[in-house]
Amino acid sequence: MVVCYDTDTSAAVSLARMYGVKYVASSADDLFASPAIQVVYIASNHASHAEYAITALRAGKRVYVEKPIAVNHAQLRALCGTYRACGRSIFAGYNRPFSRAVRDVRAHLSVPEGPLTLGCFVSGHRIPSDHWYRRVEEGTRICGNVGHWLDLAVHILSWRGIPDRWKILLAWSDGRSRDDDLAVTLLSEAGDLVSIVLTSRTEPFEGINETINLQWGDIIAKIDDFRRMTLWENEKRYRYRYWPKDVGHRWSVLQPLNENSRNWREVELSSLLMLRIADMVVNAKQQADFSFAGEWAALGIE
Image (cartoon, rainbow, N blue to C red; front, side):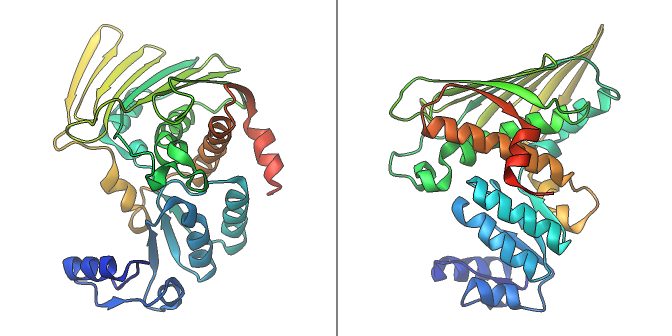
């Protein structure tokens, strides 16, 4: 690492000392202007991701932007438009598609056919009511958390082809905090069924805990917190163990430096879905029809 920057100077200095970074920039613009920098990693608060990424792309950098890539449609429109205009490389911090468990499932599904059933049960952190994650301008926990599993669903569906039209159903246990203890159900025109439950009734001892269940064709897979997986293929059973826990973080952050990057289009599509659900939560709307093509056309980007 050549240069680092943070709005909190003490945090930037601490990071520089830990990793031997030679220079602490006085501003984000100072960092982006440095000719020594080839790749920029953006890990700021959610509402600032898109603006920083746009500036970095215009400065000719390869950009890794943490999730979410945008917290509203205006940001997504500006970022996707800049990416197309600049022709530079951009990568997103959604890591589950890079996990060994998901890659192992993919190895068993060479040509997936028929409808997918995918269930994600997530025990998340307890977040105080005044935490910045909860601010509307930061996208709430839908952009901060649920977007991870929406993106995973889009990635898995892309192995076969993502249906255009979906029905979205939401349920929450407390109308005063609709992005906590929330169930998201997605039904596609092709018969796919995706369910995501995020709950935070207690603090998970070892961080976010996830159980992922999948049925597709002859495959049944159960991923236990990305530490182990059991997979059934007809009468055969396979057991996998992942130690240490592998949610795909290493492969994800190395995207700008190797050949293991994802198709950026998947991230654009999952972001469209995430933003629609975030809007539904903010406006207390529990049912909607959704079309990827329609949402993309509304952005007005070729």
